[in-house]
Image (tube, rainbow, N blue to C red; front, side, top):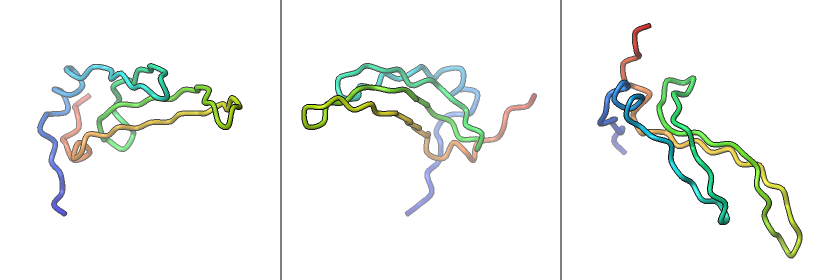
Length: 79
């Protein structure tokens, strides 16, 4: 399969991206805009929710990364 390319620049993403609303089992959470240590861009969410399993409450830890395909290959920002 062909490698994906990112259609925005690193600066455009970091200046223009907004947090994303994510709903997991009816719980509304917000994924924050992130520049990952790998150089990829996207959104990150971590948290905990309670989920009912067989009539019993179960604590669930959430770790969610949403990565923009091809963003790791974008030129890095100058410091």
